[in-house]
Image 1 (cartoon, each protein chain N blue to C red):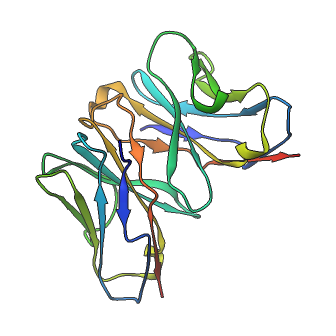
Image 2 (image 1 turned 180 degrees about the vertical axis):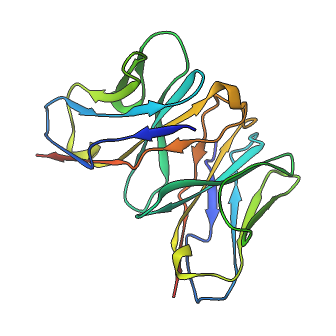
Length: 114
Length: 115
């Protein structure tokens, strides 16, 4: 079974631009979560989607948004990019998004904001 | 609020020796605990998890972890380290009362296994 895939793997943007990242979950998984990884803040939860609905949200500004499609694929969008948004963005999928399911992570998208 | 502490930024061990990576947690309700490993330029790979039952959990690549409720710890162990085990290790927790999957991660411990 194919794992979680994320595209693109690398991105370079400038301040003020917006960016869209894509995540395809493991086949059959309906829950998709997004995490941001930075050297200073570590791994932080962004949001979780299930059945095209955002069920859970972390403590991030409204510039960070996401959506999920009927095939469970998910996208996250960051508008008005800031230098501090430079990070590795990780997507994770699980069957139903209920504890204590295991989340399986993709390779991440590394975003550099100049 | 849930939290995880990994007190060591780096652990150094010689190949063939046993290794321990420490993790303590704080959570309301019953904890669900996870260990993930991250290799350079890669995502997180699942190693093992504790849900309930036996306090010794066995996982991938020969790793195991011991859940200790009284000490609120979930240390990762391996009897004999390999150079290829060198990577960044994350402990994570979620609680049963939340219902929804939202992992809280520790800051990570870099494991360096020398030949």
